[in-house]
Structures are given as C-alpha cells and as structure tokens.
Length: 487
Image (cartoon, rainbow, N blue to C red):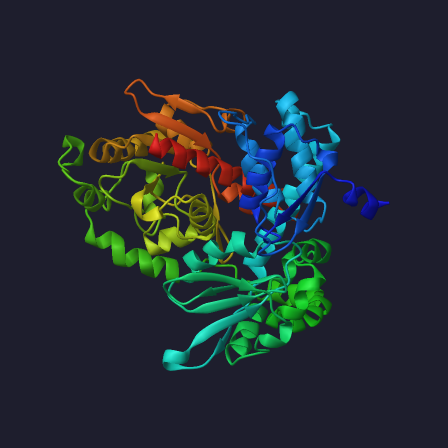
C-alpha cells in the first residue's frame, strides 16, 4: 500500500541528502503556507535534483511556530528513521493550530520527537567517546584517520567538535554515511566510505592498551552499567576492547589485591609540596586595607592567607584564574585534590567536565574568570586518599573577603554560582539550588547571579542514562549563560 500512497501524493519533495535540513525547511515552509496537508506530500532523497515544481510562498505570508521547534527539529532530522521528513512536517502542520503541542508530554508525536532527539544526542556523545584515530604517514605526510559506525546521521553535526578538540592535527573520520576531513585550516564533509578504507592499527595502540589496563579500577566495576555505556557494537573499533573480557574475569581477584596493597598513612608527597609553598609566605600583611590594586597582586597576597584554619592542612592557596576584565565569573565550591597540588582552579575531573561543556556551549574558557568560594582544600584523610569535605558557613564567610575583592577588581556583569556553597558565598544566604536552577537573581549592588549545579554533581551520578541527561541539562544552563553574556 505504501508505494501506491506515495504515487497519489500531490507533491514529491526531493532533498539533496539525508541531512539536507535547509532544503526540508524551505520546502516545508512553502507547502505549509500553501495549505498542503501532510498526507499530500511524499519526501525523497535525490541529490542534484534541481527541484522547481514546489509552490511559491504567498507574498507577505509568515509561518509562525514555537521558537524551539526549529532547533529540536534540526536535531531529530539527523535520526535514521526514513519517515522523519514527513513526521517533522506533520508536527509543523499541527503546531500552527496547537502552539503548545510540544509541552504535552502525553502526545504521541511529542513523545516520538523526544525519543528521536535523545537517540541523536546519545549517538553524538558515543561518537565523541569512541572515535579512535590511527596515525598514517610521517613528517609533512602525517595525518590521523578514524573509522566509526554511527547509528544516525551525526557526522556533519559532530564535525565542529572534533575541529575544536584536534585543531592542531590533520585528521579524517570515515563512516558509512559521510566523511569529515580537517587539513588544519578547512573542514570538508565528503561521501561515505568502507571500513577497509581506514587503517587497522598503528604503533600508538599498544600504549593506549597499556594506559587502559592501568586505569581500569576493578573495585568500581559494574558490568551491566559498563556495557550500557559502552555497547559491544563499538568494541570492534576500539583498541582497548580486546582487554575487556580478561579484565572483567579477573576483576574480583584484582580488587582484593588492590585493597590489600592500600597503605594506611597519607601519601608523603602532599607534605613535600606543601613545604615548598608555606615557608615562603608569612601571614598576609596589608590585605585588610585593600592594598592589592590588581588581580595579580591580590593573588600574591592570598598566598599567605590565614583567615580560617583550612590553610594548615592544604598544600597551597588556590586562587581564581582568568582575564582581569572578564564579563562573567564562575564561582565553584572549593579546590579539590588535583587543584590543591597544581595551585590552579578547575583542573581536576570536575574541571574537565566543566571545560568540555563550556566548549560545547560555545563559551570561550579563556574569556571567563573561574574561582572558588573557598580558596583552600578541605578534606578528610582516608588512607592514601584525601576525601573532599564540604566547607562550613564560617569558612565560606571567612573566604568571602577574597571573593568580594576579586569581584571589585574585575567588575563582571554576571556571576555564575556553581552549587549551593557558591550561591551562599555570592548571595549571603542558603538557597535551594535544584528549585532555583536556571534563575537569575539580582543583588542589591546590581550584579546578576545565575544559579546552577556544580559539574562535580554529574560525576557522582552512576546510571549512564541519568548522567547523560544531567550533562544535557548543564549544557542547557551554559547556553543560557552564553546568551546572558551577550545580552
């Protein structure tokens, strides 16, 4: 029955490619403005068809749809469902009479759109996680080639991410649908390829397998969760996959051996690093009189801070970092273990999540200032490890002296409170972050404060699907921040 229905359609729309959203959008606008019903249209992919038989939009006519429909439709357009073109047009048709349709979670079409969006976003995430480049050539001929098999048409949508991440190298990503090629200056999207067109291995893979074997933590292994996050269909293209069955089989024994080897005293290198810092700095002098006239001077003064007892066990003061004229300041809770050793904020696991999501949101990390409500690492020693301990209200209040001076020198237009401790520091009172997330609170001095979670919250989520959903919410928050920066 399906071919006969297609033959009876009044209009046959021919798109240049599976990802020709621009062509679909133009055709959909023309057809909708000419009152062409969804059942009177058939949609096809026909490259270079030079279609000229579609009706022209009436002069002065406007097609009004909810603002977020185009963005959501563009995401769902990348889905592999062959019926997506007609489905999205049906949504467009319905939205003209039902402008609140996308807010009705029980509607069949709304639910289908959400499922398609989620599948595309997940495929984008998997491509970013599981692409493995292999080196070919040397010297001027050196480049890196990867083979990947996405479920949906996500290559074009994902290519800019790989350009940002691997700007300094020449690379090509081959997939059955399309290829992406970066020569160091220009990104080109080409036709699909076969797996045999990609190299099978290189000398770096042995190092990669060694690295994976050494970071594998048998004590935290959850096989079902791992296979859900890293489905077996991706294993055939991952150099480390050959190690997984053996590592799983020996996980229980390896975990017991790891616990048996765990030392009870704290690791001595923390004390050695601390000794290099604190003897050089007497308690800060003059800072109570606002002697510092620049961020660099304030940072130097903070090295001798004794405003609360946390300095005694911390390795060093971890001060804010970024341009002196930043328009936005991100405020976290406190430095973690890696920040305490490095002396720089947001360089640990949460910092890497933060950087990646800022990058995805289009926020330039080099143009923003990042700092913490508390400038020293508060922790509880537990064997070799130092476990994060939340600072109390007194410690936050003591360190607010430094926060206030950072803001006074930089004079930002917007502050982003990453979590409850940061919100307490910036607003002077405790607020429910989960309820007020995404809101902007204006202080008495006119400073706008945007409320959201701390990126470490994402790392604490164990269920992969929930973690991905929370990452998407935080990405949405960062896109709002970008919009507020431009406002």
